[in-house]
Amino acid sequence: MATKRYKVVLLGEGRVGKTSILLRYIRNEYDDRQVSTLQASYLDKKLSVENQNVQLSLWDTAGQERFHALGPIYYRDADGALLVYDITDDESFKKVKTWVKELRRIVGDEIDIAIAGNKIDLKRNIKVTEADAVAYAKSVGASHFYTSAKLNRGLDDVFVDLAKRMLGRGGASRSKKNKASAFVADDDAPMPMPPSSAAAAMDTTGRSRDGARGNTIQIVDDHRPTRGSPHHGSAKKSGCC
Image (cartoon, rainbow, N blue to C red; front, side):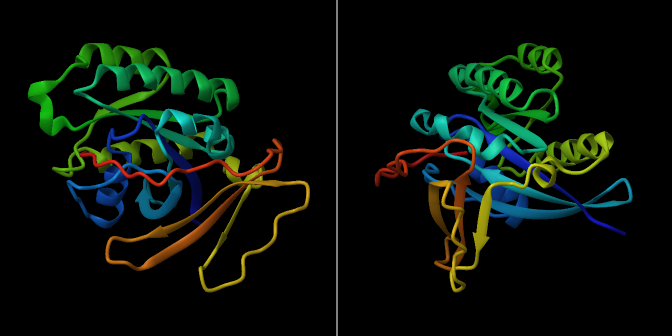
C-alpha cells in the first residue's frame, strides 16, 4: 500500500510548548528544561489511519515575534497546521488568531488547521475558556484539542485528526505539487547547492539531547530574494511545556 505523505507545520508563540509536543509525540521524551526554539527543524512520524499508511513531516518553527517574517517559507506548501497556545496565557491564544489569518491569506482554504490548547496539566491557571476556544476554532473551520506534552495527553488525537482531514481532501500533497523549497542532507554528505536565483533564508543543524547530530536543513526561498540570512542570536531562554 502506497504511503501518503503530508507536511504539517507547528505554529504559535515562543514557549507555548511546540517543541515539547513534537518530542513527546515522536520520541516519547519530555524535559522541563526545554529551551525556546530559535531555529527550524522537522521530524517524521509514520502512522496508520483508516487502513492507510501516512507519513507526517512535522515542522517545528521558532515562535518569537522576530521570526514571523520567515513563516511563509515553511507553511506556503503545507498540507496541515497545528496552532498551539498556552491555556494559561490569553495573549498566546490571541496570537493564534493572527496565525490563522496569515495562513488563510497565504495558503487559502487548502490547508487543514487544528488548534491545541497546551499545558492542560496547569488547568487550575487557565485563562482561555473552553467555550471561547472551541467557538473560535469552529468559526474558522478548525478542530480544537487540549494537550499536555508533560502528561502525554491529547497528542495522538490531534495528529490523527489532522491526518484524517488531509486524507479526506484526496489528491497529491501540496508540498509535492509545489516542490517544497528545502534541501535536506545528512551532515556527512555534501550539501547540494541551490539555484543561483534563490536566496538562503535559514541554515540549521539539529542535535538531540544526547549530543547526536541530526539533519542539516537549508531553507531556500525561491520566490522572495533576500539580502542575507537573518540573525538568529545566541541567547537561549528556558521554558516549560
